Image (cartoon, rainbow, N blue to C red; front, side, top):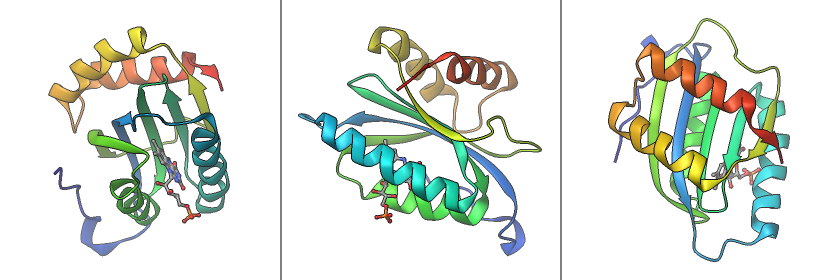
Amino acid sequence: MVTLRSSIRGEDDVFRQLAFASRARDGLRPSDTSEIIGASRANNARLGVTGVLVYSGESFLQLVEGPDGALSTLWRKLIIDDRHRQLTALHDGVADARWFDDWRAGYVSENALAPLLRQWRTRGPALPPDDLEKLYEFLRGTEAY
Ligand SMILES: Cc1cc2nc3c(=O)[nH]c(=O)nc-3n(C[C@H](O)[C@H](O)[C@H](O)COP(=O)(O)O)c2cc1C
């Protein structure tokens, strides 16, 4: 189990970026992904969380960015969500600025995603700048769901 950084000196408004990968539960249905996307869109907008969720049919990759407290609460929900498994933090760090203006979900092929996840799994959970750049470009380029 990855232990995520706790908030800096208890301040709740530190701006944080968190990226994770996971595997979809066997037999996950389109209605399940619709529910995940619906809840995420509503909750994230309310909490000032932006980012991108990418789904390949087998794997998830998500980057979320926002207030530290909101991301810690989200992580606790993700850990117990049985619609995915093998939840792994790829990146967790304080950031200066948002990468994304809103939150959206995108689709990408497993062939494109799997090799990147293999690399980032071994380099995280504080990705070096080159990998962060690659992650940003990848998320920006994904097709909206
Ligand atoms: C891969 C994956 C990504 C998720 N991303 C988010 C997210 O960005 N925001 C969110 O609120 N819930 C997300 N969820 C759903 C949460 O685990 C949880 O079910 C949901 O936040 C509960 O919402 P509620 O408290 O409004 O019932 C995600 C679930 C999965 C499986």
